[in-house]
Amino acid sequence: AQSVTQLGSHVSVSEGALVLLRCNYSSSVPPYLFWYVQYPNQGLQLLLKYTSAATLVKGINDFEAEFKKSETSFHLTKPSAHMSDAAEYFCAVSATGFQKLVFGTGTRLLVSP
Amino acid sequence: DAGVTQSPTHLIKTRGQQVTLRCSPKSGHDTVSWYQQALGQGPQFIFQYYEEEERQRGNFPDRFSGHQFPNYSSELNVNALLLGDSALYLCASSTDTAYGYTFGSGTRLTVV
Image 1 (tube, each protein chain N blue to C red):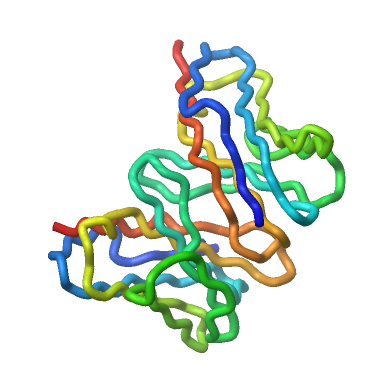
Image 2: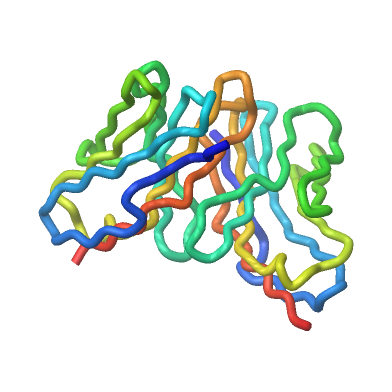
């Protein structure tokens, strides 16, 4: 079985500051891991995905995440926050690339000027 | 290139009624999954359809049923609506050879 824990329901940063959103996973098989972003009243947009290739994954809009098996983590980072990054971020795990996604409860990113 | 299209965008129903939500997958995608997202929560997997068959199912009661058509579009049906069924229903499409899903913008269902 798979599960995801996202630490911190809300994260606040200043514009230009580092963004760090935490995700820890549990999986009985080698996981596939994803980060999605959701803007108000919209669906989910894929930011990046880990599929057992490189452990450092680069995504859209300068986001990246590092898969650390020893820590069962897949934290999302961005060097410099923009106001437009304010949204809800979800980490998700899957047993394979096309099986069901199991989502965390989400982290709301707030960006102040 | 059209992404995943869901209809309607918003819906208000009364307890006990039945509802049908519709989804057209992204061009080239043959697998459709449905998720329920309650307010303030992450999406929860309902079921997945592939080749017109339900391939996987989450922990949802039989009141939730679905269908996939030959053109890969899909419907989600919910019978005997409860207040707790109020949520954003998301459709996601994919292919068996790709990783990750493309999500639609969802249907906001309110049960009163």
